[in-house]
Length: 414
Image 1 (tube, rainbow, N blue to C red):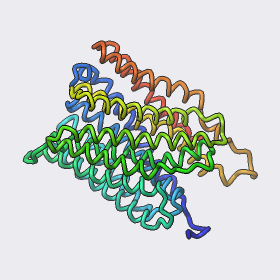
Image 2 (tube, rainbow, N blue to C red; image 1 turned 30 degrees about the vertical axis):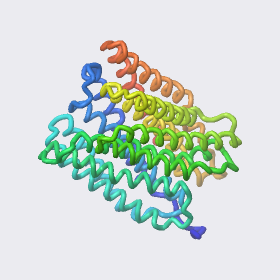
Image 3 (cartoon, rainbow, N blue to C red; image 1 turned 90 degrees about the vertical axis):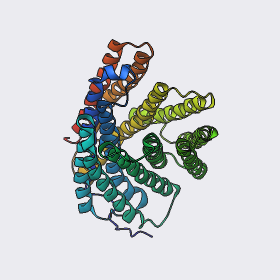
Image 4 (spheres, rainbow, N blue to C red; image 1 turned 120 degrees about the horizontal axis):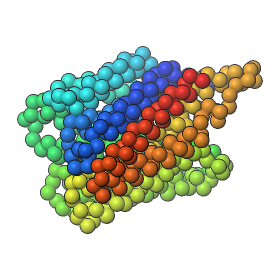
């Protein structure tokens, strides 16, 4: 058993470094997207500016925030100490510079992106080593442990496939570029991010809703079925077998559905009847993720293979499932993290702000509404082929991202 005095918290500067970097990358990615609106309208997703925006969003924001959150949540959730915090700071700078250089070069000079890719791969390997050494110390292996291990495994596979892609940009010579691209996206988006959100939702949803007495009985089949779905879907990129993608999406849909049923049970057994608005946004993101899986399964069953349609579906998968989940959880995690660090020891000794006072919940409502309106507006703009509408809604998305980032950073100066 872990010792009662074991230090399970992390130097707060480490997770916050990742999170602040991620917020800056989020803002940058959305403004790049805003200035690339004409390319989006014409269905040109595979151009340097879009790749730059996508990598700032998925690597700079989502990956870096996920890493920062894990530096804080893994010790708390599993009652272990981070293996080496100094190594963590070195890893932060290596990964941060690698992502910056990789993303910028994808937009400016793609054949130079391989050098940023090398630094990013090194940074991710350092993170994986950190997590491997830390998770080795876990004594009680819950289902959340296996979700985290699975997500880290897919991160490794995604980063290796991504490195093959940037190597091809620079030097060529590697066949099946298209299959590698789809594999990279599937392992990264559906493997790493989705399984990580699944795993930590089993910790965060009960914590934010004050739920007790739930079973998590569907967690194990959800994990197994979802991984099987990922395997069949990736196999469909490499093998000319028509039913593989249908089977893959059926299993992914079923695995996600089991996760949704577990979350529903957790919420049914909550003590806290009035949930905080940012947390509700994360729950809406879970429902949106299941909806996207349902649509994808339908497209697969009815042989809808139009590239533009699937490109926009991937965009929705990333935005309303992964990004919305992260920004909802982050609006709860950062105030809690900062309040615990700064004020927890002062309770009873002096007047301290409450956790609720550190969050501007009214602003969060407006922000989350604007995020949703922007995404819906972008889809409508694309449907009616209106450049002006697309420009407006991408502008709303960029502006909302800026205000969101500033509101999170504002918490850290209280």
